[in-house]
Amino acid sequence: MPDNPKASRRLRRKAALAEYRAALKDFRRFDSANQTAAYRKAAERLDTAEHRLNQLRLF
Image (tube, rainbow, N blue to C red; front, side, top):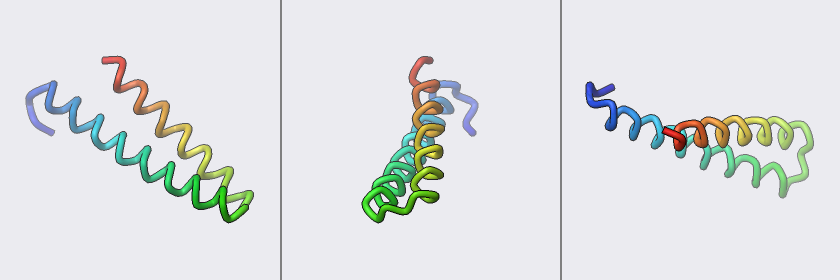
């Protein structure tokens, strides 16, 4: 991580956004395939990623 706090925040936000996009992709894939257990797990992952992304946007 760089010493610059703004750059560090930017990198964390970028990583959180990438994780959110990956979780959303999995969520949509399992939703269309109607796989209940995987769908539930993907939904939890998506919720966690969205929460993390929202926390980073507050600062």
